Amino acid sequence: MNQRQVRRATAALAGAVVLPVLLTGCGITLDVLDRTHSEDEFVGSYVGDGTGTRVALDEDGTFTAVGVPGDVLDDTLPRAVRRALENVPDELEGTWRYVSKGAADHVALTVTGIDGLPARTVELPLYVADADDLFFLPDRLGREKVVVSRAG
Image (cartoon, rainbow, N blue to C red; front, side, top):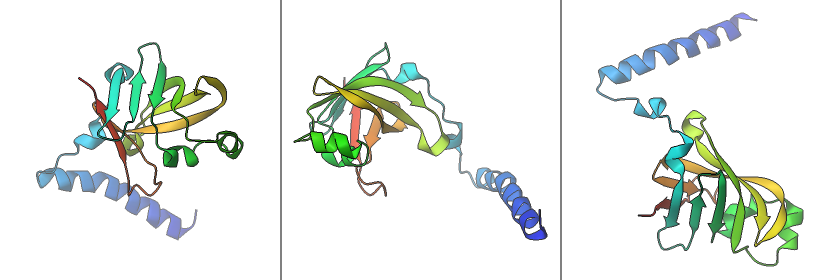
């Protein structure tokens, strides 16, 4: 390791230790970093406000999703699958699991069926705002969100 790399590593370590202390001293809590969820919290039905998007996460680890926007699928489905579909599919099905990665917590939807037909397995991320609000990102830059909220 050269001297420049050592300085960078030292600065990064110092920032990681000092910044939380400073922010806490200013009255800013870091609850986001302490946020942990379990898969049980996500079981249920979620509905998009006015979008027609519905997602059901079942206790047995399966899901169905209806009305997922085409923009979300464009970046996720393999090109061959997109070409085979003439329209945006009405229903997706498969399995789901919760993936905890700090700021990028998400529910991974592993799509195994499209409109009742077997599909090539692809993973579609459903990001976590909290256990009652999840969202798709049709725009990878995060400028747009399709939010689905827990029903009932």
